[in-house]
Length: 175
Image (cartoon, rainbow, N blue to C red; front, top):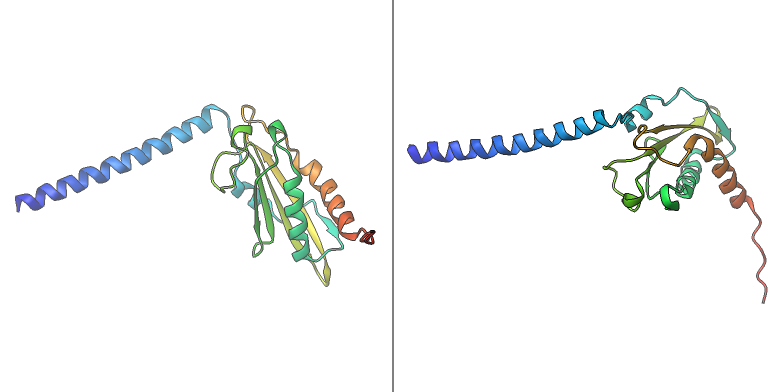
């Protein structure tokens, strides 16, 4: 019986130690967020879906997801580095992009700190299968975590550029 109790006590101690380490990490992250005045989450951006403003495009919703992904990859963060954290969720008809700090710009993982974030939602235009409505929402994490990408200003321009590139005639081959 005493071996069993000792093993149970050891397991309980290990569990509490792991829980304490995890709790300390969470408390540390929360403290950093509060002390550096960070705000905004991707969930907050998702909560804005359906609130507009909307822009209607003569593009099918599925094609627009590809356009938005290309557009998000045109963004340049701090130091001129391309935004790598771009995520397409076809089922939700949304594209999310996260601008990271210059030293973390190559991080393609969904998790991790970001400076600015953008969510572009694609909604079918009722009764018009070849058209869609797009709404773009963005956020800045706070005064000490400023990003340089201005998503709501630049995305419409990038959309127009990509759509123009798609409609450009193919140059004939010359020899």
